[in-house]
Length: 388
Image (tube, one colour):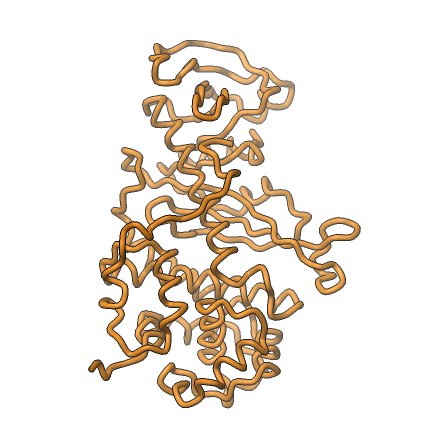
């Protein structure tokens, strides 16, 4: 019989405590930590994420039911919903943001050579935004419309491993295109976006950084064709052109040449037009890159369904951001464990198994190693078409 650590404790062994200590020292606060440390707070919130708890009372009840095991989980403080609520309210949310960013760096190194379905040596990112609706009476700081509140989660996803590399949490009023101002573009990398991010002045800044973009064009695009490249219409391509913009503002905002690719998606009977500043990739590879943008949509759907960011445990801005960043940290921690243990199971399946086995005493690699491949499916919903 295995007499080692609990599954939850084995999972948290991969948490870089030295990084957490540095983050705590970076943002000192007055809230007492002797009876309920930052690590206690993180572990309690991580437990809530992994077991789908719905409220602070729910967390308190479940953990107290296993009070004899809390020490072995790494939790030293006394669990009480008021204590956890105060910690989420008063401890700086940036501690957990920096912890998550540290985990993200670890995850990116582990997944650096991961295949994402496109023959491309460059790093490729998918950028998108999702909105989380809130009650205006409970979250007045997140006013979105006159009778509605919301927060937006702006995410840049590394397509190798689906690791989020940039996350910005804003109120609902911030337009997604403004997030481009906050991203430090990497030379030689590809940024795949939908047409909500189409701003030629900002795309010019990306171009000057020697990075590449793939983005859907709007129907009212004004341009002049300079050259048409040969294509194979049997592949779905309809044109591959070199163009310059002719709009009153667009030609000033983006004076360089662009590549315009038109593609017919027969499966969904859609004609799609893409713009890119890369002229050497095969046209079909450009369309495949855009198709990979749906990984960020799946990430949003997955994290909303399987981590607790739609039911918040606190109503202040600090508490909301603390919960979101801990959810991101848990997601990346599971991705790190998946790679380190060489597991074939999807993150979805791993999370489902962990939700039922955190208090078991079984080697983590054995628990997650033998999984029926038929269970490796993720519901994507009708809205997750190939292109949108």
